[in-house]
Length: 326
Ligand code: PBG
Image (cartoon, rainbow, N blue to C red; front, side, top):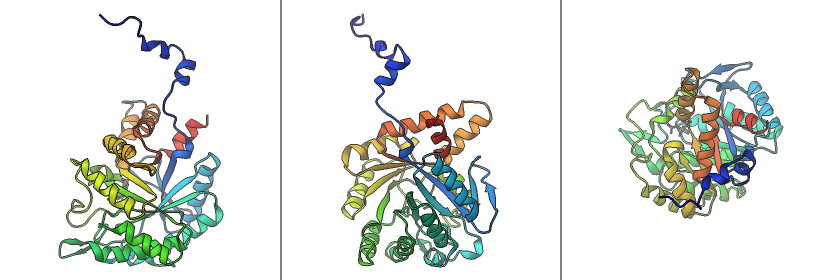
């Protein structure tokens, strides 16, 4: 026998009541839109495993950002897609002040001073080895990588970036970068650390977008083991102690428990990166007519927020923003 005086369905009886008791609200303010930059002008190439997501040359990227700003998106994370001949072992192009990427960041910030401009710090877009750190005799060297990452951070800070996102998972990188930034006077540049970044197969489409898959081995000696949850707390302790302003969990949907755990245990804002593979799965099923892509998109984003994410980096940002502003 159930208790007939308790009827939770009463709070679901109309759309108005449901709206009134709703616990989680998605907002355009929560989104950061990742976008891909390529050389040239008038170029727009669709990424085959991410329908609706393109690599843009700077002129068209500026147009795309303008459109997104018009619909209310405030955060953008820019990823450069480099030709193979611009890559080398030391990711030198990553700290070249005159690179297309740095010039593009300056241009974006000057045209859209009010947006939150974010970048990703790791060697992989520039590395001929396709790794986030420096590869030497089959090993990723930690402390040698830090110097390279800090050089990247400096040129990006100088270009006017608001938030730097170290995604490399080297030990000590947040503190090292914070220190170098502060010494150069960039005390106002924020660090959003990719804190619990897992060695995930969900990054597949992104590596296609950047042509950045590792040429040797995998990323398991630096990215986290998907089996581990407590380890995320160790990473978060260190990142916050080293000066991270915000922490991140990546991927998002298969790691909602980790998002919740970081939200429950720390006071800094928590970001979730709803990664390329998560986007691709929904798009693919939706193209086949197997599920309602728009509804699944909104449900996924809401669930990421409900789990505890304050900020969501997502390829759905533009589509979801349009839906939210209707
Ligand atoms: C690079 C980086 C990756 C992603 C963001 N930054 C790939 C990787 O670590 O291999 C993945 C993003 C996505 O899949 O959408 N360090």
